[in-house]
Length: 378
Image 1: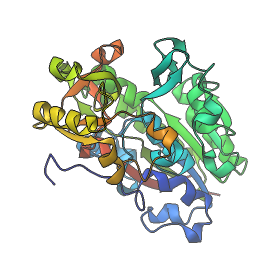
Image 2: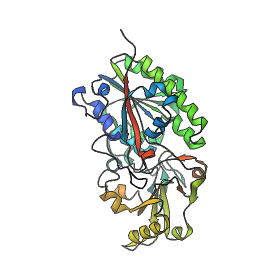
Image 3: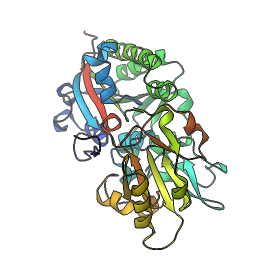
């Protein structure tokens, strides 16, 4: 596969969207692309590690002996390969086109007109968006098929708008230190829960701050200890399944603001630095095609460029978009395949990130799906 060939999601097969539906089904009805040990398990712990791509795991197997010893291989994330879209897709078992969390920064209707909302923070430039964007209705599908699956994640995430929109109805079991994650999971499995969802964000945070350096390696060593604690604390009848929402690309200083000639044609930008949505200033019917042509002239050597109609037709988001979901996006997608990023001066935090994600490169799109039985015997 060449660098300029996108990795498209396998929404009908080995993809993040199929995990929760598979594990809510009886063992005999699960798809063949799951690791064998996971297909037969009566109890499953689905552990989602934010930001651990398959290629990063492959490059550092010596740092993670417990994780590396698990059986399985890579599956695809969703488009865009970003936390908000991918985590929602995991828990609702559907692609972004179906649930509506179509990116990290999306367009919403503010009191004074359209604004760009950061979905993880639920904020626009005007501030907290809860008063005019209801988290309970922003995402339209039932998480975990409406079943009260327990969610073990950082206690700080409970009560946030993003948690409400993508995990509403789930039983929140918070941990305050990562050392407690395995303890909480173990107690839930001992109580008989057939499916436990656990989430850890440390790998992604370190990659954003430090890149793929020694700090990142140290974090992977710490993650491997958590994986080991989970395996050692689960009964033999239970299975730990580890996956991730996306991988990483180290961009560092190759993050730049959009070219001025292009900015002059825009009313706003949304999305994120490796999946940027351009919003045409012109209301004319052919404005998307003209804007896409302009973007290709400037960035075609390092990025995929597609109109929203092309994105939808090619199935990047997993199917046709409802009108209200389409309104959350821009006119043209600018998606780099080179290790570069396109900044929005409105989003100041973007300037500080070292590793990024969102695009459709192998490093961002391939994520692990590995499994192992617990080690506690009778």
